[in-house]
Amino acid sequence: MRISRLFVYGLIFVSLAAFTACGGGEPAPIEPLAFDDVLAIANERRNIVNERDMDRINALIYGREPSSLPWERLFYNPRTGMISREEAMEDAKIFFELLRHWYGAYEYFGGDEVFLPILDSLLETLAATEQHVVLLFSHLLRDYLSPVIVDNHFYIDGHRLGVSSHFFIWDTPFERSANGFRRQDTGLYVSEIVGHNKYEVFRLTMNEDGELFYVPIIIRPEGDGLRYTFTIIYAGGEEEEVSLPLTVFNEIHDFGAPPSLRFENNIPVATLRGMPLPIATPYDYAIGVDAGNAVIFLSFAEQLQDEPVIIVDIRSNGGGFQALSRMLLRYLTGYVIPDGFYTISTHGIVPPENMYGLPAVWYMYFNQSEEAIEFFEMMYEIFGSYIIPLDDYHSLTPPADRAIQNDTLIILLVDRFSGSAAEAFTSQILNMENTLVIGQNTFGTLLTSSFLPMHLPNSGIPFIMGPGHTVHPEGTWQEGVGYAPDIWVIGDALTAALAMLNNR
Image 1: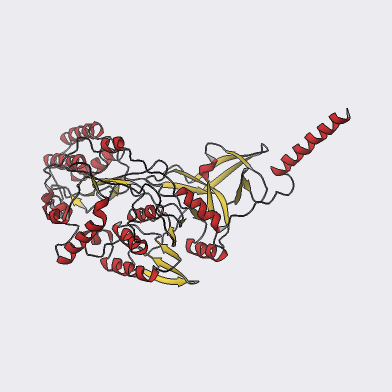
Image 2 (image 1 turned 90 degrees about the vertical axis):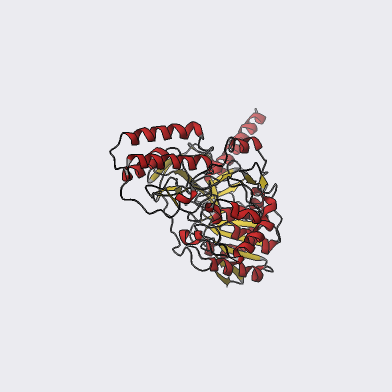
């Protein structure tokens, strides 16, 4: 009987101890994350193996071939006040011909099986309209294609056929141990976040003092409401309903401003708000970048080569040419740093001597000065060996098989307004060891490449569609969601990064 009572008392003690750990009494201390812990977590993320799924890649190019498109009619056509029904129908056929033979994500969005019936329906609608249909035609193109194409680089008449996402952030700090996520203020362990995977919801986060913790961040589709409510269940069975307002992000309003380099606490901080090339292109004016800024930014490389820590700030950098970041990283590391994704391009592999044999639509990227030709030859020499021809019309740029070794600690600051080529820069950093991406998710504008604005020949309706299509490893990136940072920041990312470095 005595042994039995001791056994019962022991059970009671264990139960009380377990209850205390789940929230009763003073919570047991958890060792706070140190800088080396954070870097180890980031390096583990870099260990994704990029397997070449050629069946998937070949399916995206199957049956596609060059077409005798009227390139000369697609540039600089003025907007027409009125067009006839027949002219609108011709524009529709040309537009869908471009989709079929030029647009990088044509097969990704369904190919002929999806787009040819849409064209037939559009032509039927146009045939039944009044004679003058230019305004209706612009709306019809968008109405017919927006349910199919979800691409932040795709524009018709100034309207993007893209997608964004809503972020709902609960700024209550949590700690993480072997037992899971625990609220700092109550000591309660999280058992479940109803409707969500808690390991995907909780993000490693930092405040402006450099303090590290975890917070729940929930991503929802755009248009899903300005408030999100969910239920969190704690280990002891207690439930809590949490209602979060939509997080509004603040853009840094100096896109295209000249790059800068300054030192904060003896740490170099290079700022870049656009991604130009160091030669002038017709594309510069279209997206608001300046070739001179690329020259300035690349000039920083010599000053940064011997620095043990570098911060590069690309918050609110809307993109341009990803070659700029490739060039900078090559100067810093001596390596060509690949992207973390495959790029399938419809223009094929183009050696310098053949660049002017392409349709005007391609070499208009470059002027025909001697400087431009020398630059193109240099770029081809550096990067051309990384391009794999798939057929006479498609080429493939693969990612690295593993993370690139790197001795310099590179910290990249990003936000929800970092997009396109700035995301390719982020991808390159995520392909390197000893790096940290800090801030918020990037925008998610990387499914296809961008391109010079073109105009339909009769209506003059402007549009943009890119010839490149990216294939990302599962779960690493999504259009409208972007790349997740290694450390999410509540507050100013630069202030937080400097505090973190000061605390290490």
